[in-house]
Image (tube, rainbow, N blue to C red; front, side, top):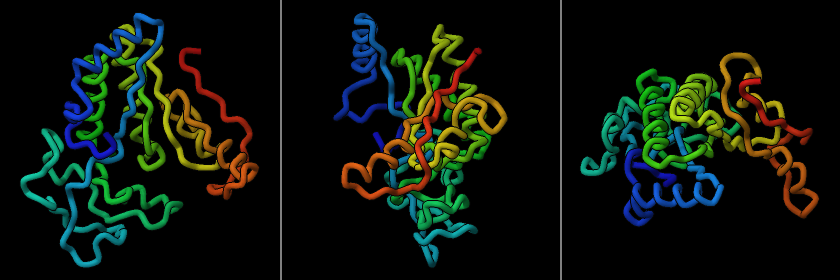
Length: 231
């Protein structure tokens, strides 16, 4: 779910890993694919701070604590140092607030090498456990670019080693700029290959005024292309 506590388990009300694997098998038998919705930016809201000023965003950060000592994240993430403690996001266009909490959700320290390695291992676990064919990735722009340049190649490589050379990574970049959205795909802007594609929010922002909504996010839709791997 959106407020994950354990990346290697399914909340009982959603079912079981075995049931999800069975769904994947059934889809594959029909020539269809299974895509999982995956979040690497944050986990559920189990951490806060008693420091003065919290939860107002602070670039210098606060002293974190478990809100309830009996409710903590599982395994590797049962460790406050795995998370940012900078308070909530107040300015959605301030790049420094990539460290902030999205609606109070616990923001992962995705710049940390150990956190990156664990999230890559979790992705591999999900591929092995469910035989899925791709991930739809949430809150992409709330994670630093260096993460995607490290994590995405690792996931593509792990999938390819399991016979899934076309494993598909696409993400949500909630922004009206084609350039901003495209920067998370392929080798745009230089560096290693990142995501295969993004959902085209520039088109959404361009069309919304036409159907009576309010345009937000800026930018003009010019047709963000899907990135291609291997030629």
